[in-house]
Image (cartoon, rainbow, N blue to C red; front, side):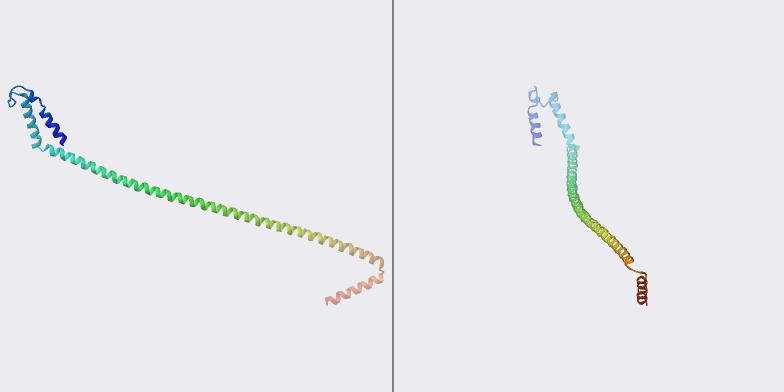
Length: 186
């Protein structure tokens, strides 16, 4: 405001009115008429309240700018709050993802260990089954050899007895066998 007043005073002081010839306060002097018109114009502006209107418009514009700045500040704070919220959510999601990955890794390790244990148990069962089959085959072979040995011994004994035994002795052995069977059955 001081700058404007200083500029106006300097422009009035250096006006061409001081360089004009003749009396300054005469209506024939155009410089005086222009000065009077300017003063009347400024007085009319002041009378009709133009400076207060301009001041009011400027104040209104300042208030609008201030409101916009406050709104921008509020929006900025809201945006920062949202950003902080999203960053917090991102950290939570990241932590949750890490927990899920860790959990999946642990489950995979447990599943691998369980699979190893199942394979070991399966191998043990198969080995036991193979050993049982071997023992069964061995027992069958022993039984077959024993049965053949018994058959060979029975055949040899029959042949030997048939060669050495007479008909009377055979009848006597048959009778004794029948009596033994009767005694055991009764």
